[in-house]
Image (cartoon, rainbow, N blue to C red; front, side, top):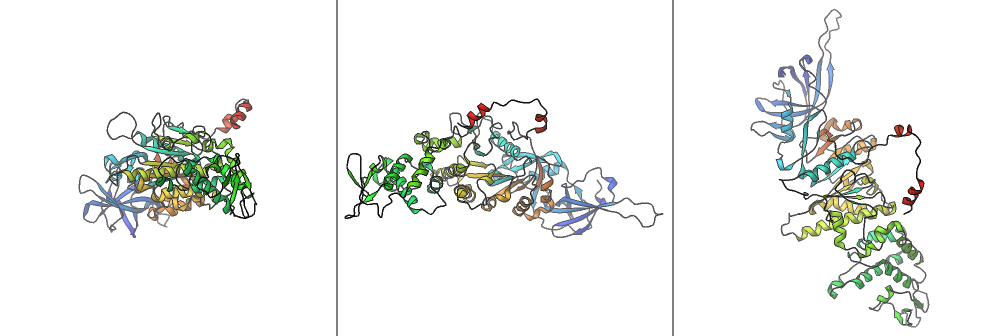
Length: 579
């Protein structure tokens, strides 16, 4: 390639225009997205690197029809992205241009494949390299990212339905759990928790720890005050009586179940992650709903089944949790009859078979340790990835379920790090993947999303300090809490067809990308804009195929419709439906 064939014709702070004088010298060597290098004057080993954004044809034909037609020339627009120093054996590439090359200029050339590979690996140690994609216009070039910066910072994968998000998530996680430093048998030390909203990932991770609604044991007594009130109270109602009785009952019941010295018992509060018996809370609430008081003493009194008089406020009131009692005196000035709706709601929740994973008998015997181990993969057969299948979780408790799991994993990271002698130590860093995140951390201010938004936003803001990072996956990024997206340092943006989503993602990404973001609506399935702290250059890449794949493929409607009529076993479906 003759460098004399290039001519710089315009320069500004971020872009240059280069004219190609004789296009016949080039054989399909140019394409949008190709990289070009421009040497600094008198510095043959230092170059400004740019990316070809677009081009136009400059026709220099004469107006005289008798004059022979000239070969048209091309003018390419180049976005400057960085500096390349070839003075040593190791290429050194840095983002940002510290000086604009001035015309005339010799030595302009397209980067070779080998040069591009060296740029992507610049300042990247071998042990840090993590790969899952190739350059879209040259699939022979792998695009490595810094694995540490990719996973120890939050990342987001966004794209419309059918753009390849599920395959991208799968490929990244498959490569992560297969990566090893050195040779050893068994699992590496990755710990990934994937919130699977549609139940599509268990086919992609054959050795994963899959937890669906039938295996999930999520003890209600681990819920914090906000989660408990969201589950059991009419949260939109301003009923202080309900809240006060509920808080009082739970706190006192935790103390009554606690086995330990009095000093530790006195420290127990509403949010202490300790067991309490929800059925006894209901009995307590019923007794408060039956309470009456003596006019002469103003004491709230009951009589128990053995005709013993019980005075509310005495220290030894555990009997309020164990049996129903009859009120004595007058109901005036008491809670008598004011907790009926509250009690009905408690009983309705406990009797709802769909909530057995949260309120069933197993949750009463499960330990805190067992609960943690099931999510982090420390089971009978240890696993790098835990797939939490949320597809069977009732929608009204989806937010609470995600909130509780997220919160206890964050607090696990916090207390584990607190125990370490060296502050930077983190022996089991966690990655939490939120599939279809817009469904439980939306911008909405509705109370039903409050718990999950608080838990996940806390991870977004503070999780990295304690070895808990997250991946946000969504087809509607414009609907997700801005607090969460603003904390993401790496983005994989796939095809987005919705204008609101396109504009939202463009606002999140650096403005130095030029026209790269304009390709978001036209990317083919499996292609993505990869940008962030983990990659040396923002690039349009093709994600490698995963194997095995998630069960997220589109149904072949027309081919199936053309087949012979299929008889459905409705009885089996209804049996499964009504379990």
